[in-house]
Image 1 (tube, rainbow, N blue to C red):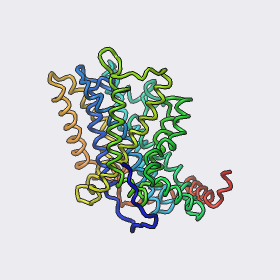
Image 2 (cartoon, rainbow, N blue to C red):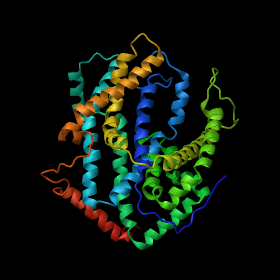
Image 3 (tube, rainbow, N blue to C red):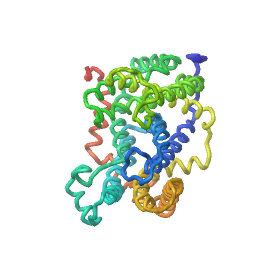
Image 4 (cartoon, one colour):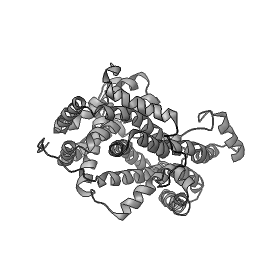
Length: 420
């Protein structure tokens, strides 16, 4: 089943990885579709239609296996590519502008309307003015009105990037680069490629057993995908191994999805699975955890492998979508919650409501993007849209904090013994 036809000496001349851009656009688009569908799932979301459709839960459960891991995988690879073209100070400036500013602005401007309509759905009659004043209490939702909700992705990416900076600086030395080369060769072997996720996620397994569901455990959960994308995905050896073994990964993904559905996911009217393992719940949960890790990894390998083969091409539509996808991500959940709040009160079928929410979300955000967001420097800054406009007061060159941070990273890379 597995194939390994790679010669260690093979190299490529820094190809443009268009498939990463396509995957980024497709993954964020799928996020909007999934969020629109969650309004009608049995699993309670922020708002919920009175009539649900059980089939949606199974579809969302399948997509949830790899949708966010795919975004972190692609983000890691993209960030690593950008870092190779910029100085540390310029890169930190770029990440601050593209991630931290949209996160803070989103928490103050985009997330509050979403929380307000969530509270209205739950029965609140408070005015928006009074609600917004509650944000100044700086209490985390649901105890207060402040939160990042779906923008948690930006917070995670920024933390991961800060962790990645010294790692990439350390890899500039010959000794550490040789270690990475050896790891790359090992991971490019089909067997290691398929089981490596179990090794990468050992910190998550440990933290999740100590503090299940915590932010720390979640960060440990997604970090392996990010670091794999940053260090290995664009390697000629690993990327070619992924493409060669994409069909095997697809087969294994289908197999494990079926097994998970039969033994863990499907619940009949009596609340029982199709088949029972007959094991204690603790052991059964561990088996499910490992099976889910393998399953999502198989799908990621299959998706990236087929994308390399069929989507590694540039297009004007890709250039446009790749610029617009960031504001679409920032706005999507707030628009869906507000639009859904009114649509679910309509006397019509689930299918019609879903179409109205999904199409309405894309249309409203498209109009906002075309007519407002890409028209001014301020809106571009808030929504992380690339701009050629330079700050009159350079950031972070004018900031001693950022200078000290960059110097610390550089010095750390020159003195690896400091980490012992």
